[in-house]
Image (cartoon, rainbow, N blue to C red; front, top):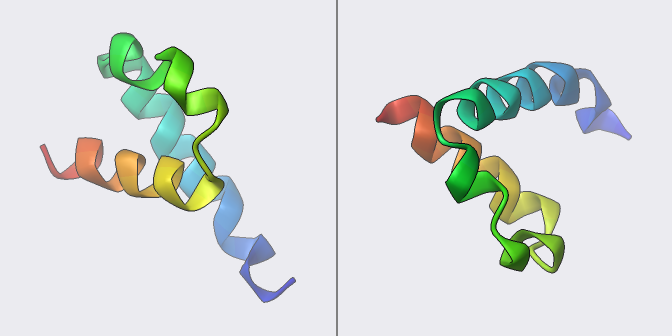
Amino acid sequence: MGGAGARPAERHELNRGKARRGKVISTPKNKHVPMVELLSVGVYLAEK
């Protein structure tokens, strides 16, 4: 897919978010949350 190139950077951003707020990322709900929402969570954490 065209967006494959952007994924590693976004994934890294999510990992940084996990280090900061593991509780937010590791909630049980996340197992059902689509990738788009996970990425927006990463953006939200990055902006804070």
